[in-house]
Image (tube, rainbow, N blue to C red):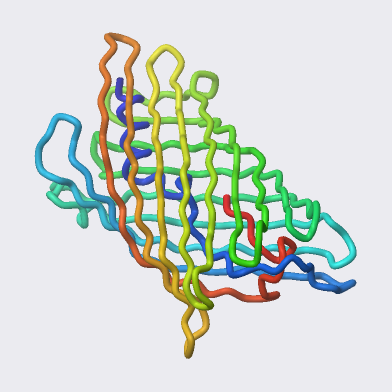
Length: 298
């Protein structure tokens, strides 16, 4: 049961990287850049986010602020449809920031690294095969320590429907190779835990410097013989390109219900969390003029 509780806690509070990645996608035009050399581009971001929720049994609302930073870089040969994209992202917090206080010291968060092999199918369409690892942790130095190391692999893509609209989608297989909960037990779940995630989103430019975005992800983790945890992540953003300073600022909103179910007794719990945050993103390299220079979302 500790394993199921750990899955639910990690999904609800610190699995922010696997949730929808509401990143910038500037207005693309259906024309790829003309070059025989290597095209490179990317973005770096820093943000402050917050999650708010109430335990399934009731009680006081819990607030969890955390910092969010990372970056993506992509390489696209001008004379080849094949390229690459790399991402490193960290989201974390000091447990002392949580309210009401847990009366403990330590940290929680996740660190994710992803590599893509990309294929530019057309000026409007790009696909990617990706693989990477994510480390989710909750560490107080006492008996409530949790850690989940997850390998993930899958396919994602984007479609530039018009100069103002871009669609994104992904499908991922999740393979936690080690889940540990300190205290009574520490368990290696190499062959007993697995999961999947499917999701998508859209960016729509409503004005030269303004953009709206939305996303919907579904994540499910299963511990064979123990139970499961399922999270729906519904996100929205409002984005504003800065005039005098390079980059953009975005307001992100999210709703994340997490349902955990234990097969040994049939106990089911549901936790609803809401997220809000601000992020500053700096874009570098080639401008977004087509699918070729648009970053994949996952």
